[in-house]
Image (cartoon, rainbow, N blue to C red; front, side):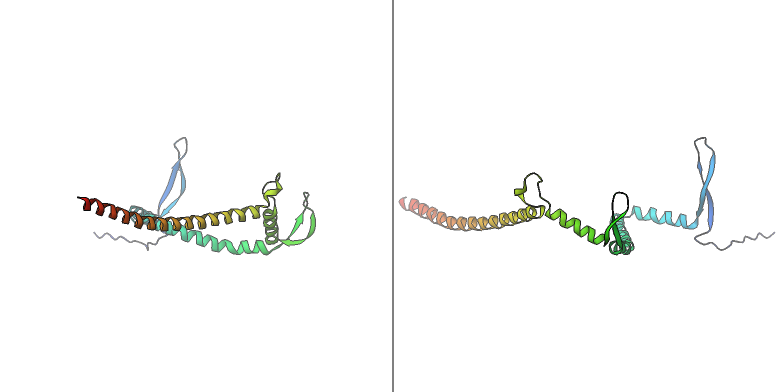
Length: 178
């Protein structure tokens, strides 16, 4: 008696099981099929997660994913910025001439920069003026702090030398009296 077993070609897309789920009554219903590829992927993930290098690998994969998404989205963004659009009123009717989204963004940025920092007190100036003022103030504070530190170090060095000489003279005089 000879038993012959014939195995067809097995690929990653070979279905090995039907997957089922259970509803609230406990009845099973099919949800799909499981292939060799599913099992291989599950084993790869299981081994990767156990490795010490997984957090770094995960971060790198996420970084690559973000780069790929940006590269795929960039043409759509460029097109949206350059495509002509029309200003409309609250009813959606065209008002004015053709413009682009980039021009609208630039106009809004200019408006924001020239807008008063405080609408009730104009002496404070615009948002741009207030920002520049704050940065200049910060730069001067850093420069002054550095200059004061240099002066303090110089004074400490000079006083340190003078104090050391005075202590040396006092100790020498004290020893000479003995």
